[in-house]
Image (cartoon, rainbow, N blue to C red):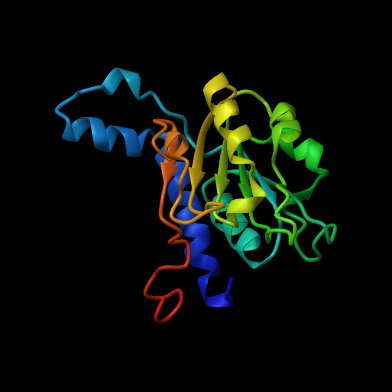
Length: 196
């Protein structure tokens, strides 16, 4: 992702987090249908929650800065190891990140063989009620395992901007009421990338 769009992707990630935590997406739909579901939408605050970042490059660092300003605790894992000059954030193993995070956000490139970073084994290590955000690459999350974990109730919600196939074909996933979806617009801001 170009340097100029790091803030744009980080902000979209936060947008998905807010949307999921406060039921903004589904409330927007049900209100337009004439429904007043106020009691159903008891959300959570981001402040005081743990955000786990998988990948700590430009976007991960930008998101960490913004989330810390909201009062979130930041933990991260990265194949390059602990980042220098960021003592305010904790480097942890992937397993610890999966177990301890309230929100997990991916900021890694997809692999050449398109193998997922998050699949059934990783979902099983997450705490109940976690939120997963993918604004990285569609191939880094196993969509079938994601849907299965959503339907089991273990995952509180998912924010998705990228898909293995675009436009996405998994209509069951993108129409799920606990999924916040956008059409790969992470860098699509006036300030982000010219001519996007």
